[in-house]
Length: 142
Image (cartoon, rainbow, N blue to C red):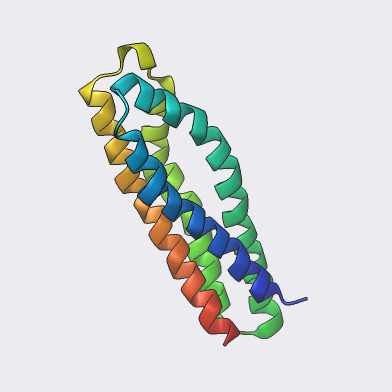
């Protein structure tokens, strides 16, 4: 089994999902009223968390396996970019996530909307890390 190809596939799926959130889902929320925007984010966040967290862990795990079997440093680099998503999320994005999950859609206002926009900018860092992991895994495979 080609562990590098699995790592690449997992991080390509991660990056595609993250990019979709940044470029499609979040901009679509902007047409909603503040409370509706927050409620939609609160409904989608737990689902996206489970999916993206497992893909990032998988990319890390299979990237390390590929590095062990193939002996290529690019697999380690890709694995580190993969797991960096967890570090960035817990260090920088999770405080915003917690504030948004605790917020009441009935009392959402311009401050809530601004926090959602901040979240989208922070989430773009996850997209970038995923892209860097994909590039590393792709180059290691070629």
